[in-house]
Image (cartoon, rainbow, N blue to C red; front, side):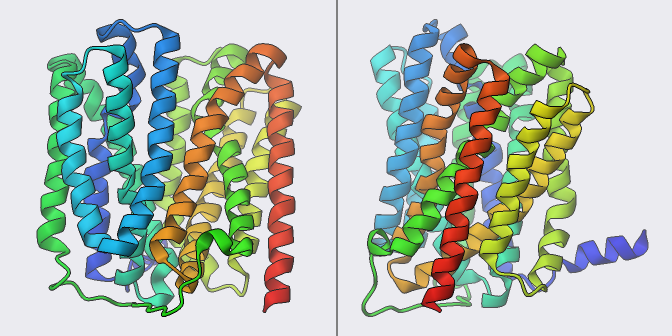
Length: 400
């Protein structure tokens, strides 16, 4: 037991002080975005909008995220990651507080759209900051630490949000949400000031290549979009499957999803440290991750035993733990060929596109075709993503 504990602690060693500060800022920011899980409930119950109206607003949410990711990359290349991160965090805080005062359907559509443009411009800038503050040999583990902060934030946020709603109401939720974003921006200003921070890795490319002309990278982005399309089903359609087919209560569904977060918290960092020491390419690890996510849907279709839900969640979680850090590290490594903000924006956009289309597709398919057919379609999409990664692997081999 002591050896396991020591190995776990050692997996965090060697990361720069700035990466730890960035992780704390991310944790505060993600825990603060507690409005997001309750947004549809707020719009329906407090504002009184129809489900159709809520659906359109959530589409505005997705499109705002996509544009924000693209714009954040462009602005990062022009103004630098620090200015973009500070502007995004501070302005997002102000917009969260202002959102509660919008009561009209069209104004809420515009408000949510604008909010997500500003909020998600943070993501590509934070990736570029992570590249700057990480030692080259620690980049994958640095990404894993940030993912750990995101998962902790997403776990704590909804719990805090539920307490705030039950005690103060939705008004308190918007104020706390906005205040935490502003707090994160203040921490960024003092803890990661460019003049004080130690930059571990700088890349100056005098003739930068456009990410949109890098066909190898675009192939990778398409594969990650398909990976995201399969992965996000676990946070929209799969919980419905748990309830409709296996009659699981909200408590049991919550425990299954909590298992995902706990496993990531407990095992992802030591797992990545162990895998980094193997002579296996990042693309191979991403490939293994997508295979595991695809397998999770196969077992859901093959067995009617309730315990298979845990096995499916384990497949998905391990696939996620392997694929996300190594795909992020691959994107950061590839970005040295050109404008880093543009490259990292495209990586974020891949998952924004997944969110825009995957949830709606899954819901529509279940309504028309049922769960088994829908999972078969998801398995085929995963298989197509695997084929693209094999093609990418071959292309990289030829280029080398």
